[in-house]
Image (cartoon, rainbow over all chains, first blue to last red; front, side, top):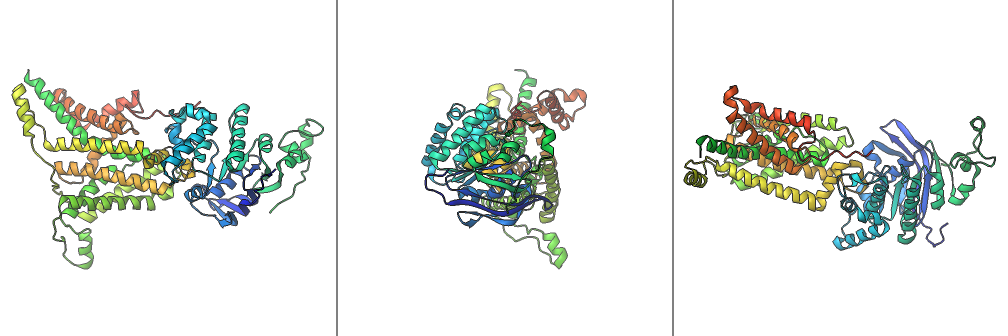
Length: 273
Length: 328
């Protein structure tokens, strides 16, 4: 996996519990680490707590009446629970939300420029970064004067990632980039993510349901199930794990099984906390 | 040229000028709606409150004088100063910014991510609250507002038109002044929202609160900014209305005329607010002049609303409103 020598921990989540509206317990003790320069995948089905984990880090939780009630989150060894989202962006952590969330009435270029909102390093640097984003996403350059609301899903996803890049991030929390996109586009976007990781040194914490694609591009993976981490390991090991194969990749040694057999199958899982 | 035609021309011009005043109020609505998706029912009351505060500060009225006198048995009413209009305006702007901060801190901060209807109801509450506070602070009597805006018939226009057509047009200087003010205000606002970083952030917040948060835009700061701008626009509208017909509480009702203006122009368009205001202004004056006598007059009360209704049926987003983007 990480062979560039950079193996220090950027982000460390330690046994956090998240409660929404004071009653709904969503994360029941999640711990994970994001290494500098790595792509860390957070896998699991609907409602497993992937998005909540990302939002706990970026602290977008607060505006959804969620709260980290236990545990700690540190970024570069500094406690970050409860910081403003804008403070997180200034520290280099930015979230790309699930479902794109482009500003639909702004043009693509204006969308990208909003990403630079917290930066104070002058127009020249920002323009240079804009060009850089256009080299990674040439399609955005073509569409840069169109209203984001009228662009395709793939273009919007690119716009959302490009917008995050404009903040000069160190870590991008990328939520479900494959959602609603054709397989070919998913490959294209993941390819770009990989490129950003390798060439720009951006670290990623990636929440995905598409386990197959995520494990091909990530270095390390965590599997979440109903608010807990049930398994973790280097991506290539997870890919070979028989449980992961059966439950998340949809294959097993005996080929496809009938659901009758699946039902009685007991999973071997261990609880991490 | 027939006299009736010239007279209609004059009516139309006066309608245009009255329309500018509607536009000024409508502008405040559009700003807040664009930036936060909130339809601010309190905009009219804000104009009233701004005008009251301006008069109060200018004439050295003591705020809450009645209340203080009732509690402490004192008899104070005035500080005994008369400030120049310019200084009073600066103080009023500061008050409106303070008001914006309070609104954001105590109301909208707690309503992030709520349904638009809930935000709307909050502004209805705010409107009544502010009207009450305005009354308590400055008293409910009709006040004269004189900030040096020229008033009375513009003689140059009268003379020019008299020489040209043999009939002098009556156009109020105040209306001409208001028109210039509106043009300046709109130019500045459009420039701000289209070409500055803060303006872009403001539009971003309007589109998607969560996404704006995620790129590090502080919602609180943007909202204080927007409400401050709306407060200043309210001050301009309130001052012009107040100079025209005195500062009185019926001003908040006149402000509701901004609703048909917005339906016509579109809730999300600054030029729409202006054009809508002009159309309503001219429309209701001309209608009253041409059709009014046939059906017993007083058409100005309802003409704007009927026109708006027609628009709602045929073009719900208004003349310049943003099309609702929906991808299928």
